Picture 1 (cartoon, rainbow, N blue to C red):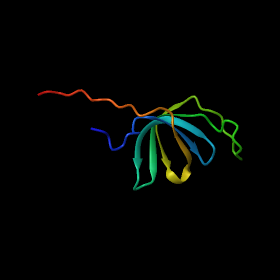
Picture 2: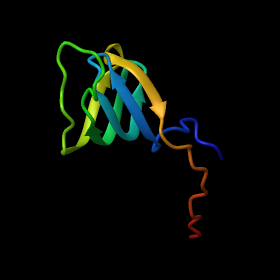
Picture 3: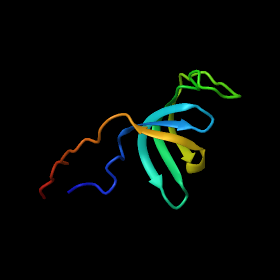
Length: 91
């Protein structure tokens, strides 16, 4: 059975309107609150993109970051969704 949310669990690249690039695992999308939550997130800073407030990359890996849809400029898929079959438990 195919998942109704095939990109959950995939590595996602996100560019904020502040020109910061983030990469993490797509954890959830909340349509009601217009948010995207990434897990195991790394911030790569502005990487030379034009902005009034350039930021450097961070070494920290954040457990989760919630992004408001209004703060997102672009989202890219860094890896294809994997189709797999969960092991069947026979009781």
